[in-house]
Image (cartoon, rainbow, N blue to C red; front, top):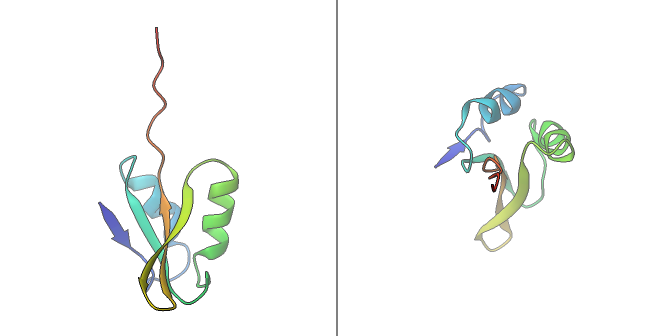
Amino acid sequence: MAIDISKMSSGMFLTTLDKVDPGSEVIYHVGKYAAGPHKDDALVAHRLGHCLLYQRRLDVGIFAYIARKPQAARVSK
């Protein structure tokens, strides 16, 4: 499941990431380069291990910048 917050105001990234299920994608920017009001929050969340960041090409020179909430770690017995 993907949630697009790229057109929402700043401050929505962490709230959205917290609410989505593990494995869900949060599209935080669409454009030529990673930018927008959610970029800094996405980078901090990534550094803290709360999400994985990647991009998906939508068209020539246009990318969706995506954060994916990781799946819960499985504990083997």
